[in-house]
Amino acid sequence: MNDFNLMSEHKITNSISSAQQFQIDGTIVSSVPFGSGHINDTFKIVTDGAHGHLYLLQRINHHVFRNVDGLMDNIDKVCRHLKNKLAHLGEQEVSKRTMTLIPTLDGKNYYQDPQGDYWRIFILIPDTRSYDILETTDQAYSGGLAFGEFQKQLSDLDPSSIVEVLPNFHNIEFRMTNLRNAIAKNAVNRVAEVQDLLDYIFEREEKMRRILEMGRANQLPLRITHNDTKFNNVLLDKDDKVQCVIDLDTVMPGYVAYDFGDAIRTIINSAAEDEADVSKIVLNIPLFEAFTAGYLAEAKEFLTDNEIESLIYGVHLLPYMQAVRFLTDYIDGDTYYKIAYPLHNLVRTKAQLKLVQELETHHQQLLDILAENLKTKE
Ligand code: GN1
Ligand code: MG
Image 1: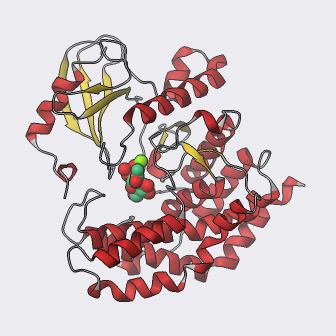
Image 2: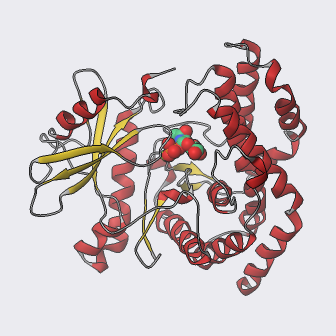
């Protein structure tokens, strides 16, 4: 297990000395762990500065993101592109609608500390919040607008200008190969106990290849996509209107159905991603409907017919792929995702597989809703 699983006092002290390497306004008053990310360590930094005194400091997990230069260069490009798109709104508004990187004292976009850890700082956008579980259809609609608009704004950014920081990130063939490798290695002797879950996964393997096949047949354009469209990666204001799409680490060339499917994975689930009582995992169809309406209101104008067809495949694929990834990590001995307790990855796997099952049961209903929201396309 890597040390990203632990949030120690020592890390908080390190966070303060790292934050001091950036051009922040004022003196640091506090640093506290923030958010629910599974990969990086995030801290909220408060300073006594007169202008903007809230910052988001992150220690980048460089075991996952090995090319930190490429990663930060991507984020820089994406932020600049989004800011240009919104420039007509004025500087203050732009800083609320997009992420803003704070440079280091010597003008770089990240800092490497003497221990070899990498750090970066963003402005923390005030008066916003994110939701792990949604409460209303208004929130879902706003989320749909947010990710639809995000894709639209990036649709003229050349995909080849962005480094593929995590190659094959949503390639299910790659994820299945990793799972098979983990099984063959059986590093911590957990394969036997998860055999029923593996059977369930392998039974569905063939039909989960649909998007990959469409892509290989040149039926789907590669676009710049977000690739981590969990609902908690959208900041909403106090009226539940979109403020900003956050967590730009995985912005890379991809297919739109991956973003749609990953958003639906968290939006349609009435329980948490890691709910231990799977009977609580049922579909919240009105939230699916509202997100879809918001997303298509923005995206309909640029999506091709094939991309529209692929959306439902993304809905089935993303929870399935997430289960494959959680289970691979469990079999490997929990080396990738942060865990809060020993069986966490197993619980996460079961929760995602329950979602896979629910989505299968409601397939036709979801298709009908998509069709209904596309009627105005013609
Ligand atoms: C990870 O760290 P976080 O929470 O933003 C993961 C996503 C998963 C997600 C599951 C780089 O995202 O792909 O969907 O956990 N990010 C990476 O909650 O692997
Ligand atoms: Mg992420």
